[in-house]
Image (tube, rainbow, N blue to C red; front, side):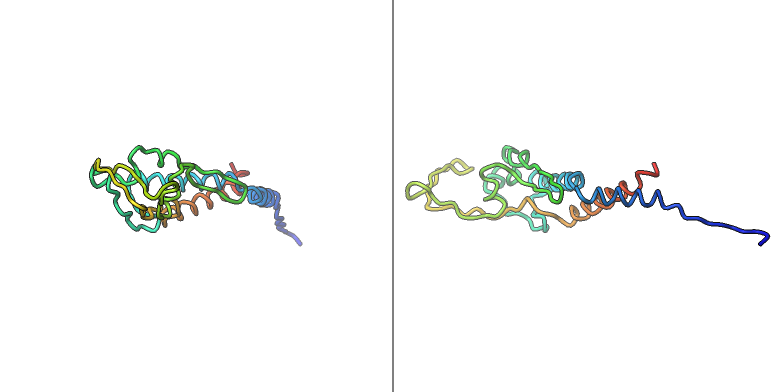
Length: 168
């Protein structure tokens, strides 16, 4: 042969990128932390601004919010500020440690523990004595369509960064 062309594939860079991606997939705590931030921000927005469930359903307005022209679940802002997340290698937990957080998320009936009735003051200043109180569900934790898209974008970027790290 008078002329030859030899092409050789050096796969060191792709192999290194795939190894980084495989290593990154074993412990996803950094990605879970990013997704947790997306979900916390969504819950905070629901409590502080939109008053809609993750599926877009508006919450029933509380008596206090009606009387004060305020925002339901946002009297003191304590519930909103309590929303946190904890990332692990393959999951993230989002929630609140407030004692009343669960009843607002799922709704339910509150009954007297000791005695036959509950006594309390309503938002309008009136006193009430009742056998039970029904709290409507106002889901603030969950994944909206927008949060799902943000989590997908964060995930794609996370793995793209792992694959692309050698090229930078």
